Length: 538
Image (cartoon, rainbow, N blue to C red; front, side, top):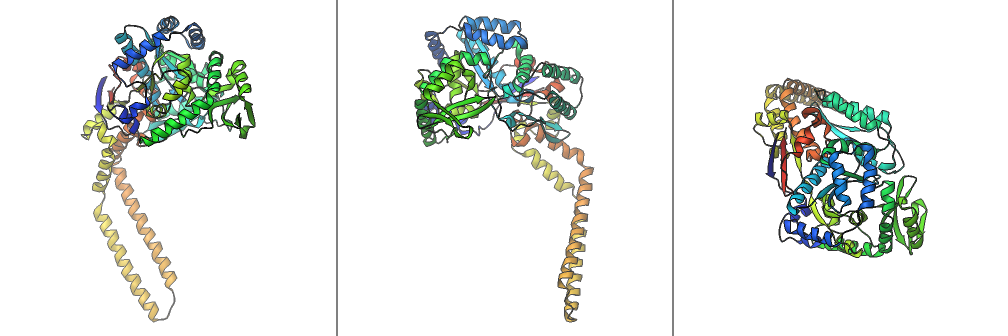
């Protein structure tokens, strides 16, 4: 295994400016990303320390059914004694969801280790599972490469109800079918049997999307002691009751400062990532597992479509007595993380960076300080087969990203086409056109009105010539199918759906090729968070 760091133009405007000094984006964050920031943030947390015993107990209770490793127990003990955390999170996707979920976890672990060394104190890696999210269509599928073709593979069950991932029961038969389809696509290797057993064991121990996700993430990262918590966990929700109350008390102020900050962000040239409004409550009400977004109207918290109406006092009563009925959105989730965890830094992707840029004054509205934002690692896995194809065609990974594999494919197809056959067909078409013109002239002289029949007849002949041409092209291409497939393999493996691999594929096709120790080997590499992209050659 070899790790290579490359510089890639950053297309996301916010992220590009975040890594550039003296750009306007930095005024929207409490800290720039550097060693001095980590030292200052650590000092701030030390001055504002809290009792973390209850938090530790909740995380332990959540993780015990998953299996606690020695390292996880050590991290829990350190957390209880006041250790800071690096936190990142993601929705509960199928087979861990896209690779960037795994990359986030690796980022959290790598940064926690780095800061433990630099600050000379324990820093704990924590993964926040967004089990409260209800967009199941976003998390119910994955992609595979089958032959040279890219395939979308989705979980077969659909629901009209917008239930949270943590409240949505899995149909184990449907999920087993999906796993079997994915395994068929990626093919059998010496590791496949072990892989299937791991997946089936995790599925059998799961009832919901979040259960399945948490089982798999713990399998992958338990030896690193990655701590997991589900945002929708009942005990965690009870722990949050006083923090929900604070959000409700300051609700109007939070909405105002976020809306104003987003308008400021737009004036600075970064757009409106949240589309915030002054009426937004930035909270959901949960009923029978479904989430209903609340807004403020006439001093009430309402969702008119669901016929929900609460006075401020009534919603505060819900927060205090039934906090499991409340749920955060993109604005209040970072605030809740800050209130519940001693966050040294938050690890997120480019999209999260953009909406965090609207939140600095929202933290202040609750008497909080925005933590350091750490952009996650970007990693592309290059299999041995793909590396061989790159060498064969004298291409680099960045060449493929820039479309050069597809350009070579089109050039190759143009070169192998039978130009003589095409020329002869065109000559036949021209000759036939001339004969039709002669016949039309003769019929017109004879006053025989057959123009439409001639036109239709000529169209039929033209279709036959097109059909013949297509068949010749298809036959020629089938002779060169192996070479064409190579170009498409490069494209689909390295730039599927015209985007980075980490956005489409789950990690299990790479475990199937490299083996179950892939994550362990990946974590042995030396990563540093920055404006580079890592290529990992298996």
